[in-house]
Length: 324
Image 1 (cartoon, rainbow, N blue to C red):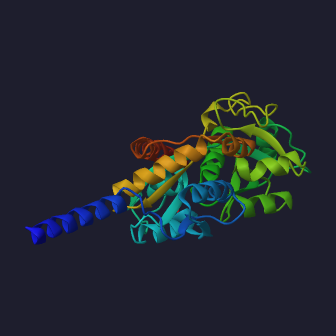
Image 2 (spheres, rainbow, N blue to C red):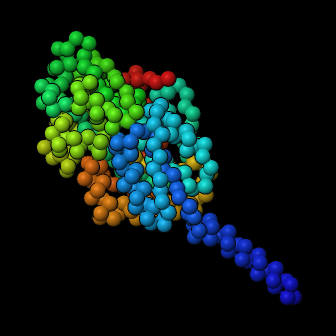
Image 3 (cartoon, rainbow, N blue to C red):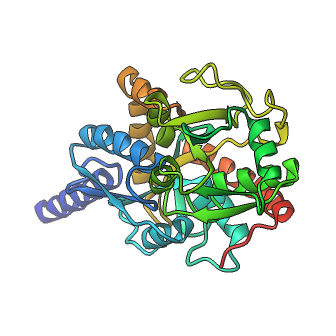
């Protein structure tokens, strides 16, 4: 009987130990990696670092941000898709990596749906149409008129082929009946640097990457792509107010992990992200960049990905945008 009791206690202890591990009691026990599939300095990178700091503090482990740019976000995304699904490798995804690339590229090194488990939508953000402060252009219509008068049109930068900014500019070419040459970069940060230097004429940039340069007077904002004006730049009109309602685009950022990650870990991460995004200090930091913190369940984020994939498929077909 004593041996039987010991065996039962051992089995109970093992079961409880397994339950604790899978309930997140011992997760995480070493640092996590948050992969940003774009270059440092861009919107995705800025938001990821804000999130990593507070999530790491909540989890009691460091969350290291790792930039792996290239391929319109596909290189970093593929690296996470191939990572061990143990909750220690995360991806700061965008609508570019998970709702646009699948229609833009003839083949991808990852499946946006099958290879990932959604954790939470993190934030949405307006695109900000900006030109250098030295540009003679002061309104969206003036930009269109200037492009029509310029042989070959204007050069525009973006965070990469198929990024929200790229597609918004392609839509402007269609709606404004103008020409233009696309100059893709490995993120908003490098695109902004070249824009300020006058190497490109305009860009639709995610607001967090451009708002500080606007406030510093290095860039001139012409419009935001959301339905309402941004509280951070209330004097800047929407694209609808500027006469181009079809240019409305609402980029988003979200957290994913490799498919196969334990659901208890996914839930734990989702809960922590929600807690962080509900903090007044974190919300102020994100809103100060022109973004809107969100925080959702994994299921709600999965629906956002599915819905936007269908929407951008239509936009890409109309614009004719492609990538190899």
